[in-house]
Amino acid sequence: MCPSRLVLEHVTSRWGVLVQIALLERSYRFSELRRRIGGVSEKMLTQTLQTLERDGFVHREARPVIPPRVDYSLTPLGEESARRVRELALWTESRVPAVEAARARYDAERGQ
Image 1 (tube, rainbow, N blue to C red):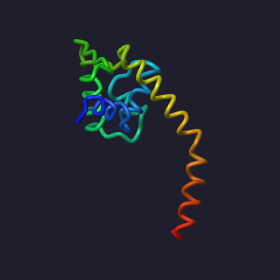
Image 2 (image 1 turned 45 degrees about the horizontal axis):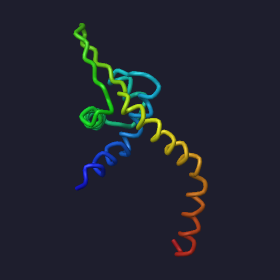
Image 3 (image 1 turned 120 degrees about the vertical axis):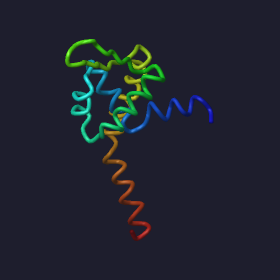
Image 4 (image 1 turned 90 degrees about the vertical axis):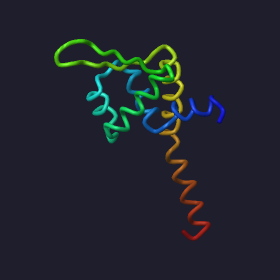
């Protein structure tokens, strides 16, 4: 598999997109980020953050305080990616009525 396809998969995954868009706002602690995104399991958020961190999009900062504090933020590469992904997400959101109309036409033509 081509390396760029794997990166594209990580960046454009359902949770990858939402994590990047949220982190464009500011850095978040894990539980804050999970609440901000909504609907993501702890396991899936952990996997998504680890994948994006490994790829160089997310920075994880563990602070040696009690209780332990871990903050997540975007790297410069992550900020660049997040801005582009956000534009696609905004475009998608604005085009939902057109997509729904196309689906309705398709279903009507096929008697579904």
